[in-house]
Length: 296
Image (cartoon, rainbow, N blue to C red; front, top):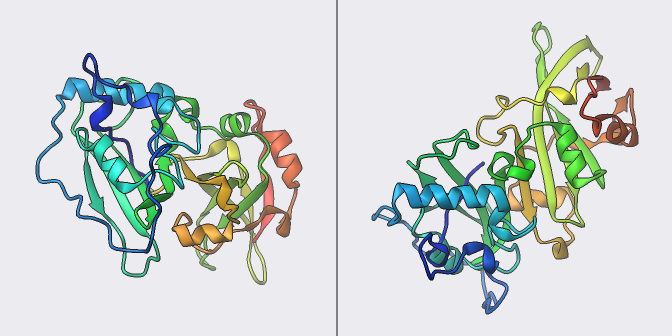
């Protein structure tokens, strides 16, 4: 799910207090996890203590500099290092916490939400929330909207490719097509950077060209990534983060519940009018408007 940002006790906008961006959470003194256990009770019944104006200031700072750290660190949260307790300490004055773990999930899912703040003009939202996958009380992965960071806020495929470079792997999924209905279908595309601990996912409409014996031939236009295919996960790009030291494969990310379904396949396994290399060379150009054909 796409969630958003909160802040913690030690980076409040007042004189003499430490800026949140000064020290990524968990770089020092992270306790060694011992066993998988239920998330501690972080449910808040008392609203955040900062004023709306202070919250607006902190959200603006987060938006412009990502808390002073680089992805896959997000707002000072370092996958593989930061603990739940450190997140609670840092974010309790701005937001609320909830345990959103489902019975079928293998790892814990903590949601941090900031609501009812006067959003800065750059941010088209009334609330921010981000999802944190945890194991043994330590952050394993983070899911966040690309719109929460200025660097990634431009919702184009060319911007994502320009920032993160040629994907180490390119994956794509075409949604199940119902034969006999004269309607288009949806697709998702994933830019996978395992050595960076970064996965970028976006959605769009796949225009049906022909029904095949065991599938469908579609036209995909990556420059037309939209934000309404999956309102829970894409606004219009989702960023998934984890520690590169884990050396996780794309399919292993299912254990972190970062993928919505198992329909993804490597781009090069499809019958397509372009290759994965040509995909990058074409769509890194912000002026590109070409579509390509793909047989599912």
